[in-house]
Image (cartoon, rainbow, N blue to C red):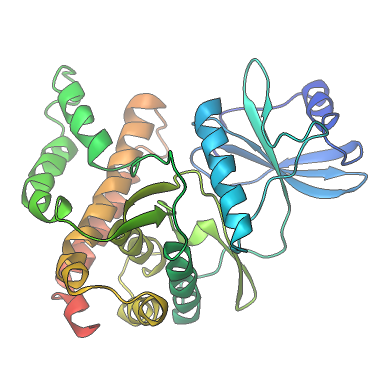
Length: 315
């Protein structure tokens, strides 16, 4: 769990009073989640997911809610927020914003070919849904990395950090392909295994559209490979990547240009998550336990490179 925000019994009762979900019986912190404080809430009427949105402001959350309403119209398999008594999905206080969801049965799946195939199909389904107006660009990409690199030049602690040098050098060779004209549309933006929910071998939902955006579709494809096709030891599972791409292509075939750029975008996806973790846990919210987790993504990038251009076998 992010452990950014806690709730007193009084504050919890006040939040619950805005919903028609009975009275609170218990609140249990849920591990995982790097950008929110998540809780399993039990009330006299059932069990719910209570999410305190530590990283997004009200305007960003209202856009997320609009996106979820759009996905509901297309019957997309995700979790939809529970409305308050006044019909609003977002509960805003002086100190935080809260969203409440049904507590869906299931769990994060272990890495597997079966899971990768279902995720590939679900991602292709998402990419066939038209985006809504007003969505931002991919929030962990170039638009954030370039200003960050300029900002740290004035910080003696980080200006010469090896990661900053690595980030700069990687962007230099990637930029021509990252700026290529490729199909664009609606993105999830952060499709890792822990943002999926499975009931046994069956996928229940794709979760957490907090990074939902309108950008190059290949970012999402590459991000899902980085997030769903590696072992817990950060080793590439080529068979899972094959199943993922096969399932994706069955519904939305990649173009020739996308195949040509896939290698670069897998590196880019790993770089983006590494950047977010480095900035988050070393600068924005220093956390000694997570400060070096960005290195996991560098390992995944190197694993992809070491696989001798595996994407060429998937066409």
